[in-house]
Length: 368
Image 1: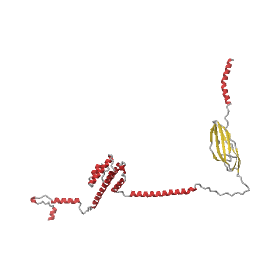
Image 2 (image 1 turned 90 degrees about the horizontal axis):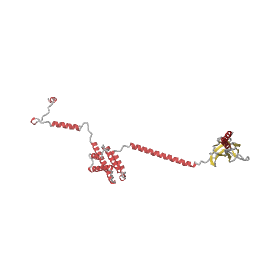
Image 3 (image 1 turned 45 degrees about the vertical axis):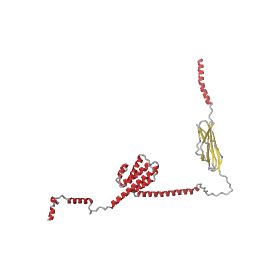
């Protein structure tokens, strides 16, 4: 008997928590249904008049709400669909959307109930009756004729003349640019087809350009100035006289200039200029502006003197008569003169007489 009581008390103790849980579940209040509203700004419109429809939903809890799919409404057409706005306040979610609709069917029609889904449950909004009619008119009055099409003024019409003028100016500028470009291309082609300058003309032109760059002497760029000055003189010697001095030192160049027809004072000044060029390029010597101008004049004078001497030699060579076939060449005349002198200076014979050369058999026959 005592054992049965113990078993009974144990069973009660074990079933008591389960009973409490079931009781709690039974007394849990269900989540409130969402509050749905569908309202319009007016319920009477004329055919084609816009009507604003507002949808509102207030949801409590975290269950997601599915908004109705508004593709079409019977007897109504959508003019504009606004976005769904949402906000959260005091644990409630608030949704709102504005829609603009109209109808072209006269009569009384209802905007149907719209379906909202929360979790697995469906909720519906109220339907709204809309009366659609015609605009008021007085039957006693005459009918009006159909009006002509009213032309709406174009707000951009006043800008058309300016646009046309701007396009015309751009086209004119393009034509002028093309014409100038064509002339420049012709001038460039003519310049490329022009005969090249002679060595003397090229050297004088480069010296003139270098003279305009005298500021290099005062800007600390004397090395550039003297390097260009020496290159002009060496290139002239190569092109005009065939003397290759681009890879030679200044002393080697001075040695070759000794064989040229230069006056002594001019040769000395030219030698000093070439050595000064080495001082500037390798010893970083900075000559003054007066020294640079003097060395420029020395190179110019040397080129002018060498050109005059070369032109004179070419003119003298051109003035000599060309050898002809009748006149003997200098080598032949010198050979004949040597032979005659040898025959006239034969060795003396006995008794102081000259020994005549022996005659051949053909000579004897002619004598007889």
